[in-house]
Length: 162
Image (cartoon, rainbow, N blue to C red; front, top):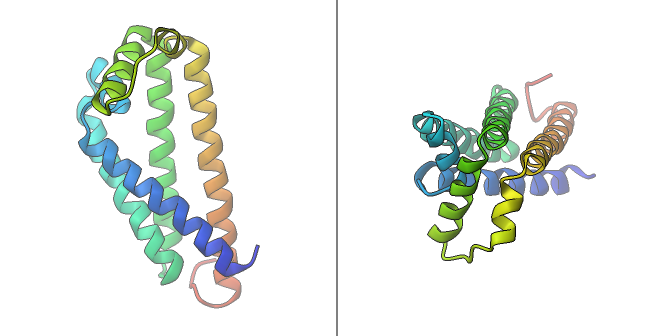
């Protein structure tokens, strides 16, 4: 993949992710907020989501204006995101009632319908496992792309990173 195409792809991914994390940070009816709240860790969602938001926004800047710590900050954001995603998956597996409540609150807060078969699916441990796998795979893909971009930048002397 050419460097500019890779920059565009990475920019879209990390800009979307930054905005999605911002939504999670301030929408207390989000599934993440509800799941972490169910186990007494609701206070963790705002700072973690804001950290991810900032780190991924900085990543978008680094993609176009490379600076020394940009790649490392991106990796820190990916690790934070993965920990929060895996944590939410584990909570939903361990507490199916919290998963149901979180799903319902999240859907209703966005004016979306809530179907009984979807509620039962969300309460299934398989759903939590799939959510964890998808979160890890998405973080892995983003890691692969951003690492490849970092190598391209290092080769073209646009970045001081190795």
